[in-house]
Amino acid sequence: MKRIYLDHAATTPVAPEVLEAMLPYYTEFWGNPSSIHSFGRQASEGMDEAREQLAKLLHASPKEIYFTSGGTEADNLAIWGTALAKESKGKHIITSAIEHHAVSHTLEALAKRGWAVTTLPVDGTGLVDPEAVRAAIRPDTVLVTIMHANNEVGTVEPIAEIGAVCRAAKVWFHTDAVQTVGHIPTRVDDLNVDMLSLSGHKLYGPKGIGALFIRRGVRITPLLYGGGHERGMRSGTENVPGMVGLGRAAELAMAEMAGEATRQAALRDRLMDGLVERIPDSFTTGDREHRLPNNASIIVKYIEGEAQLLRLDAAGIAASSGSACTSGSLDPSHVLLAMGIPIEFAHGSLRFSLGRGTTDAEIDHVLDTLPGIVEILRAMSPFRPGAVFDMTKGHEH
Ligand SMILES: *Cc1c(COP(=O)(O)O)cnc(C)c1O
Image (tube, rainbow, N blue to C red; front, top):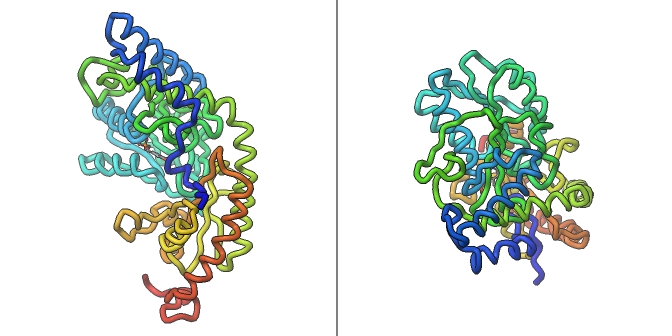
């Protein structure tokens, strides 16, 4: 059975060009970049080139790029680093209700230590209102952190507008751009951001490498101390092959972004529209206009997302669900709930995230396969309309 991978928001395969660029840094140029000798220099040159390649994608200076172990560490560095640097000035941070756990759980940890956190609501499509950011800023606000695009429903936030609000108020602005870097334009000056997180494995680079852009003049406190690597911001011998891979991935993304965004957006729309047309009692989630080109997310009422995923997987189709049931809890997605989607429907969410390898034929196959799966599951579901626990009649879950 040929398998179809539609979970690129979870991770992407490493591009062959990326692997090719990385391999010599394991076999030949394996020196420690801090070393004075030629082995060290070769490694250090690879690292410098990678930093330049990544800076180019962001239209930033290489000096503003700090490599980390991934998106999670970049988010933590931005938030803890700001908190530590600014705690004497104020202890208030503003965020949105739909952030990735790398941001929201970090802020929960700060809240337990006495920080005030304002969590802004989103509208029905997942958008944050820049005016709400303006209204939430207080004299003791030291950071606003709002994601560029949501990983579950694909909504792209008005980051440039929010950034302008923050700049006028002289408050640092961080964005988690893990889902957008390499997929849609992420020039840091256009976005008006002071800090931006990204991750290699979401743009066809390797896992375990990411970066935080920190604008010149923004001084946060490091979290890791040691040999002073990454200009003192992140000590530890560098993951040179990872950096080289991320640099090459950034370069590839620049070449392919415009074409791929158009191509994938057309497939995305065909998938979303085709599914809700073929599946009764289903609807799309997220914003249709401000949307990641590769995210198709829907809700199928009266059945669980997990049950659909298992049957899709058995049919060779890899997708994902917004809810966190996979981690053993039955908590529905905080993102869907924040968008005002009733809890019983939130359980039926599905996310298909497309990639460079996604074809027309694969989309057709999903369109042909999922409606049958839904029909079978609904026939067994106690939650369907007219069944014992008729959820159309407003039962408590
Ligand atoms: C994947 C992801 C992260 C975490 O990145 P890692 O490199 O896996 O740590 C953070 N934020 C968003 C929006 C993501 O999609």
